Image (cartoon, rainbow, N blue to C red; front, top):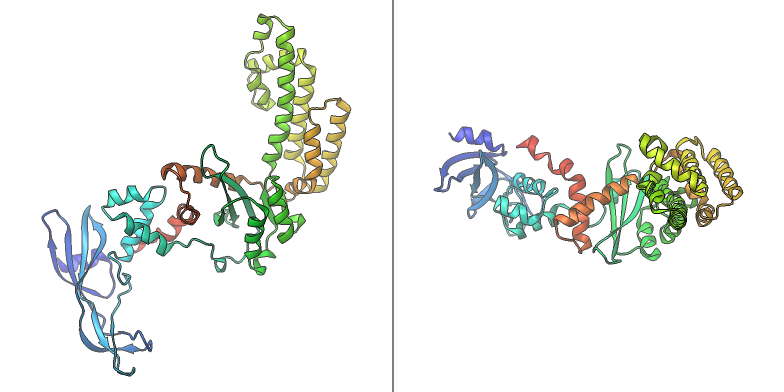
Length: 419
């Protein structure tokens, strides 16, 4: 039976001496080290002069067939014959950390369980103390980015999330998208002030700053100024969908004006024929059902300004979808603004001002068609994380939990291969 448990445990440099089962079904497996040497904690030389056995330690290991497993071990102590005073050193085997109550495999298993879950839930399910699991997070997961892990940055994204619903309490999330399209967290900043963002960007090592080609963001002045200062004006890529929100809102404002006018001018029965037109107006033409198109056509026949706004909106969306180069896009955007001015509609005036104010950043989208989609996708994960944890307001903890959710399977999933 001892040989069977040695095979199941998959722990190196041990021999199973005894296996006991408690009344509640847990296994206590007493083992001894098969190594006859260690490394002196002072001179770092290999030493093999046995001194004595140390006190017993008990380590929780991965469960076997649903039963808890504990490893019971008396570490060996060796005397150093090289150092003055002949100090002794306790042998440490590679499958556990000193002063930990868990084997490394068990630690990694618990961290895996924390992915998309809460520490409290894992503590209850695995019957391990909350503080123990929190200590594992602090030991294995840093609270700041490790720049040495990156050779290039290339595509950086920046956006904010609300820490508290209904409050203007924001944290800024800065991420990088790798060549394999995986997302990595660079920072969680306490606010979206220019000074805060600029201070972080200035911490990026110079060797990595030179590799940044695109920084995807919205039109927040603080972001744009900090990006331009550190990475250069031409790295700014204003997110296409933030732009679209502005010109969609402009068209929708004209739709509202026309509906308000028709409600005053037409009878209740005639106005009732336009039921649902708000939703149909917001759809793309190719997404409309025939009945929806009929209602929209009825609206357009009574509100030609709304038809113009709809067609201008779709024309601009067509530019974003079809323009092949930045130069071509700039030409088409210029033609579109002329068409708007000739139409006599003033509802797009604020958007056109915004367009020219951020024209270079908006046009940079057409170089490689990068957007902030990867940042928005991460924001959805963070919202789910906040709901699970009933809010996380400590930014260091938030950094750790986001990192664990993003990279935990890749880092800690290896225990499934070893154990």
